[in-house]
Length: 149
Ligand SMILES: Nc1ncnc2c1ncn2[C@@H]1O[C@H](COP(=O)(O)OP(=O)(O)OP(=O)(O)O)[C@@H](O)[C@H]1O
Ligand SMILES: [Mg+2]
Image (cartoon, rainbow, N blue to C red; front, side, top):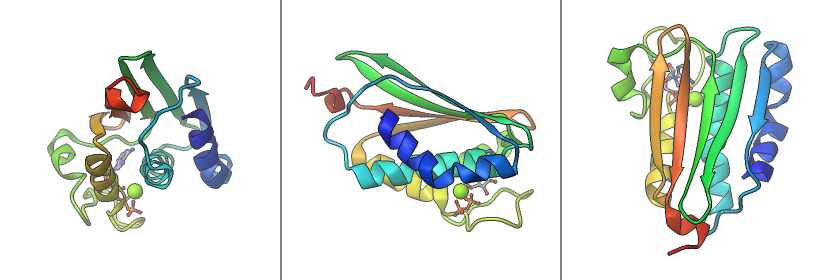
């Protein structure tokens, strides 16, 4: 997981400086199985891309995890950005959906790709957001990816 996130940051990292964003990355040395590297890369790339794009200048991206060996593994991508209003949170995973305040950037495809990849791999995605404060996406991996089942 750590290597994969570093690989994603290898592509996105240069964008942190332009916005004076800082990244706090503290994840376990866990190796998951039965995962397609390229699909997981795409999933995490899209979530971190959003965490950068919808952040505030000088803000933070905090990536942590929760690893219970042979039981569960979850990854959390948190930002201190603009947040998502409660009435819009239900539709952000829809194709071509962009929130009303966001006219300029993006096609509104990133999260629908995230959703499709997660469904295909059997990963659960949860989102919690506080408008104007920030957002956290939780990526919850099935136990079989630790090779226990
Ligand atoms: N971390 C986030 N913080 C605040 N709003 C977000 C965040 N992630 C997504 N959103 C909102 O959800 C909408 C949909 O996100 P999605 O990634 O699908 O599309 P996009 O970023 O607009 O375009 P694309 O990813 O195709 O370049 C975004 O337009 C944005 O308004
Ligand atoms: Mg996006």
